[in-house]
Image 1 (cartoon, rainbow, N blue to C red):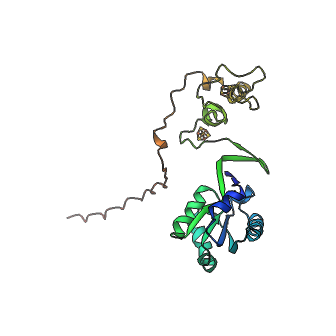
Image 2 (cartoon, rainbow, N blue to C red; image 1 turned 90 degrees about the vertical axis):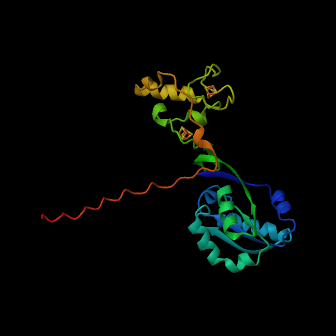
Image 3 (cartoon, rainbow, N blue to C red; image 1 turned 30 degrees about the horizontal axis):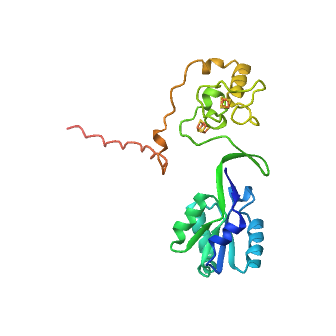
Length: 231
Ligand code: SF4
Ligand code: SF4
């Protein structure tokens, strides 16, 4: 999921300095799981914004704010409250903010969160990055530990010479060296041959933004030609 945190409240107020009325938008997925954009958080924000002199015209936790269909449904349901607002404060990831902004143009949207990374929820309030969405996955080679993300240097051939005797990373001694984890796992499973060779450089050519993906068109069965009648 997209891990995010709320921007400081004073920054939100500064962004909405000239707006008297605001509509609050959340998201039912990552923003709710990160406790920044669920109904509970929108209600709390409504209270703080009201105390700060703003009028909140309404709130909506969109059914997945990065899904065009979910945005359309929410907007339809709350159109009058949105129309009554000077701007929309969006408590969702950057994609959710833009998804709403593109559909509500020319109404101004304000981002209410910082999108941090794609991560795993270890426990509520504890998130770790495990994938950098690199488009050329090497998890097969490493038996499921990502060196691109979990090695501080993103090394495809590791470990570097800096890991400590207790298997920690030289860049961040709080973190395990990803390559020591990989080595131990492969050794335990008898898979060390997977990393016996030198890995060539990662192909970053497909990383130009914006990235997009569409399902390939399904192959249609070829129509049979009608059998010609014998003369
Ligand atoms: S190699 Fe790492 S960053 Fe790339 S797709 Fe696989 S898990 Fe994600
Ligand atoms: S010590 Fe390990 S995790 Fe840290 S940079 Fe070197 S190889 Fe990567």
